[in-house]
Amino acid sequence: MGKQQKTFEYPDRLIEAQRALEAVQAERRAHLAALPAFNGDLEAAREGLAEEQLAESARLEEAERQAAHRVWADEYWAGLSGEDRVAARSRLKHVGEPAEGAAA
Image 1 (cartoon, rainbow, N blue to C red):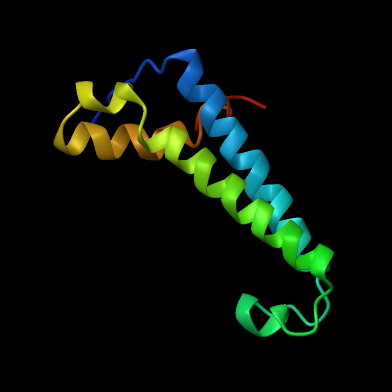
Image 2 (image 1 turned 180 degrees about the vertical axis):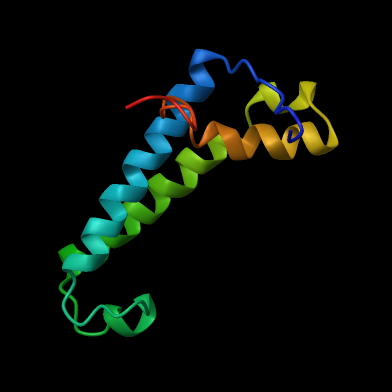
């Protein structure tokens, strides 16, 4: 049998912050995918974009940065150390997903 995984109890504010981060990341990915000639190189894609497209790119980039900050700067992490902090941050991304091995 494998090592039993530790369970973490996340505060609602942290779960909400993670969901907000995921939402803005999805919005930004969709925006980038819709840009003409976007092939993964944002700097190259910025050439020839309309001002409104550039402004939206900047807005979404800042929104993602702020959302990520709310997650990683939350006081919850101060109560964990070392391996637990790393594991908890990784698992936070999967809160609400069906447990592995759960019946469908």
